[in-house]
Image 1: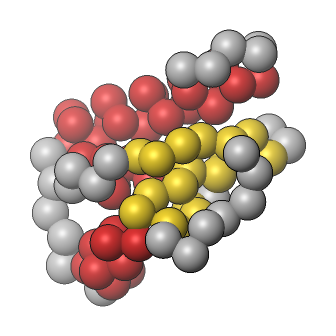
Image 2: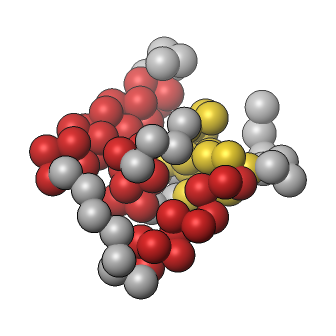
Length: 84
């Protein structure tokens, strides 16, 4: 499935995607775009984007680092032809 539906948000920034994952927003899917990934979340993540950009959010640092690693691994798996 390619493209964005009305009920989801496409995030191209790994760190924002990791923030949303740590905040408990389910990751719907990942698509590779060149060397980078596009991460798709439910539209309900919009309020957390405001929190992220206003620097009012708070997350556990080790969970954030772990989420970054896991998301990178998912993008790399797509490149290798494996669907995580």
